[in-house]
Length: 322
Image (cartoon, rainbow, N blue to C red; front, side):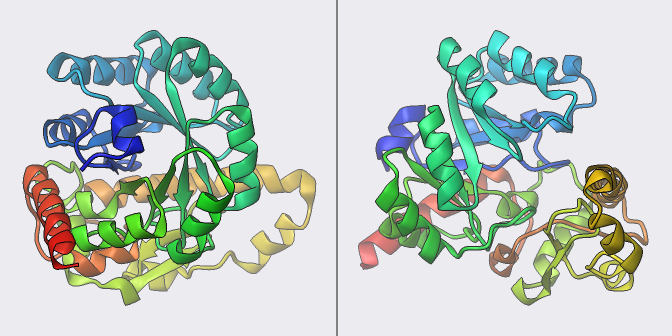
């Protein structure tokens, strides 16, 4: 299926395998590229710039198709300047920016011929990044896994399409080809899909994490502010229930003091990321797993090739039925 977004990246089907913290790997990206979609990896999945560089080179060695890197562009990410430099030097096809002002990334990438897609959660910010020169927006809606937005795709996509001239990539709530068809009818140009691909043979997370995506459902997805200082969607495991989902009284009091707020958020994020890393790679009593409500449609652990082929087949069948 071809549209403006798929033509922009030279892909057969307008889907990005979303950059997933602790999950996305070069192997997963290569599988995506071999099966007609594209993919991105968070630069923060790599401890060093050398490891990031080696991953990009590994993908380039196996495929000449378009793929991207996700960069956290706020000032607290001290790895950002080196990661951006590496992406430009090795000429990745696109950058997805998150959590900060993308102006510098857009300017540098434009000069190098690299596309920039910016995560947005509201129209105001979407208009700002379009004015800065973004090539597309990633519309993070209320059904996204990880850091979700506030608006449903039914509200958000038409709003952005009405006011923007650049492509709109819908992020959140997609796990079937039928949902892709509905998203296209809302006006989406492409889709960023994450949770569905965690339940794959290639995903490097624990068997218990993958099985949780099958055994839990949409009603078990909750928002917590105790892992990153910003609302994050996780599966409501016994460990999450015991931990609670809201910041405690001392933390809420400290958030009132502007001078402490930034440092408190950083401490919460460091602690939360350590917990997420331990949970993702091993079955410990601290099982805190990120996911979105699209787990409702996950029923088995399969090879990525099969998951992608099913998405495409379901879309074709939905088109034929309509």
